[in-house]
Length: 274
Image (cartoon, rainbow, N blue to C red; front, side, top):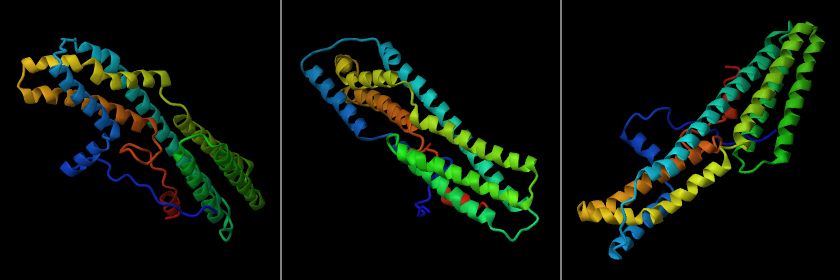
């Protein structure tokens, strides 16, 4: 039996005040934010001092960066929603097996449902640990399928209580749906947004400060000096923040982003018989 680990709960389900908003906003920033905004500011200053100025069309940003980012965000969010749906199916069918083991027999003195609850806790813990890994680990996945096998074998003990064949078939269907739901959840873990598209957008994000340094330098003649420094920082901050949000959605099980899927094995099995 796996030792109980830390239970994962969303810190909040909706932003309610300014501190919640600032906390969520902070999640969109990391070291890449400092690197890109710093590069943008330094290169803009150098171009201004060297008189390297050019009036580039800003539509290049929308075509080369914003459009790929928006497409990636939508794709990652759709995968997360599908994973959430299958997580609910996994839990729902897991509960159905539990109640079947508990309620479908005339003799309520057995402990089949209590033993199953321990197995279900172990299964959820294994799934959580597996999905939090950075790379595919064959050994951990084998443990998950071994636990599914143990659950299937455990359910067959109902036959000793003369359970009708139709009810046994239903139990097996619940377990089958659990395995299919797990497989669909695994898709969101193993298969990402097209890697070439992600690489394309990241290259242009990091190239943005260099390519548009002359453009921002040309704005010094149109705005006050302070705004000339602010504009490259604001543009870089917006683009890199969107990229960070996409990265967080890309890994929905890592328990870091605000929108991650929290697989709380302990809480689920704690209320299973409440």
